[in-house]
Length: 224
Length: 111
Image 1 (cartoon, rainbow over the protein chains, first blue to last red):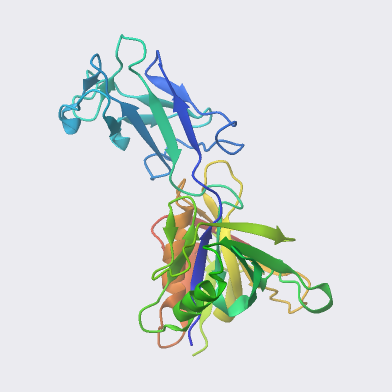
Image 2: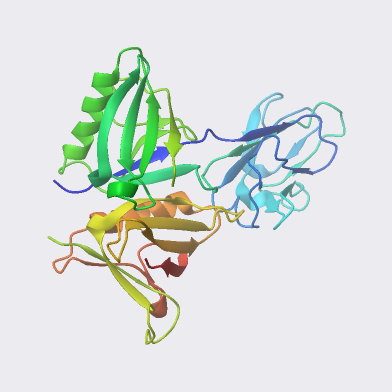
């Protein structure tokens, strides 16, 4: 049986709302996003964040968006977004500056509502891939949770053993269904190759053929 | 088949101690993004290269901002491949040969 690489997206996507913005830009803060907020001017272009804006009567849209009706939530194309390399300020090009992907804010209060949402992990603990080879075991923890124990990332074994614990929250008394579903993936050399998402809270994805109604995942204990 | 994973740092040629590293793929434990602020580094954790059972060998891949998940997918795909000689290049910085188009640098901590 070949090794399988099991992905656990441990943190839900951060999201921050900016209502009634009076500028073409917003700045993320650490009350909504992890500290530090993501930086790097290419972070958005590389798919790390998405920006949506609610259309209002006074907003002007680039041709890419057509003619959104009022109250429609529109995702801004990354080509129109500038991300400050260090401050986390996000600016949308105006429709005058970018006739295709731009957007110009409304002069009317209440028509410039933004939401910025994290799409990808960027900090330690946002997510991990584990090698199925080092799955030491799984056990019933409660009616709705099952714990997976992996060899710790610290590499410590024997007398100084170390374990990384992943906790899956699932439907009531569905531990057996989860365990069987996971082992079906690990044992499948024909259909499974590369990285397999077992549970990803950030993207709302769970493993294929989930019969356990997986709700969330967390790393509840680790010394690594 | 015994699969091995090859890494090198930027010294070209690799002619000094620890310029290059080959690890048994079976010793790969886990990987994930690390704190850099812009999501441009991912660390791979292995059982100790020194077989001391008390520490880990780590390889840190530097890549395009926010691409940790993409890099992990590419690394997993590479590790799942089955070359005849079992030799898999994950990040050979000295020769600009990477298993993912997003990886730009490689560093490691051997223990």
